[in-house]
Image (cartoon, rainbow, N blue to C red; front, side):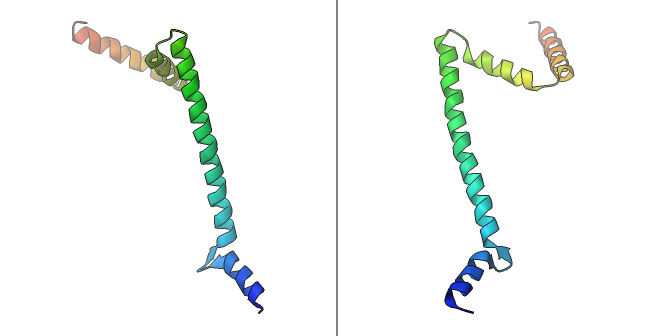
Length: 90
């Protein structure tokens, strides 16, 4: 086996691990993490826009959280919240 062929084989598999496949997976994750970072910055900018438009960002975050839930789950939480408020005399 020539030196170049041995080097290629080392790159491909080391200790039973396919190096090329692992490198591909790691690089894809790294690219997605960069995209996520960019998206996070975009979301931060939109919250700043909401705040400058006079919206309460904390309430906007709560609305987003509620919209992610199933209607039955939201109804159950609202019922419990109302029950707890009444129990506390609120």
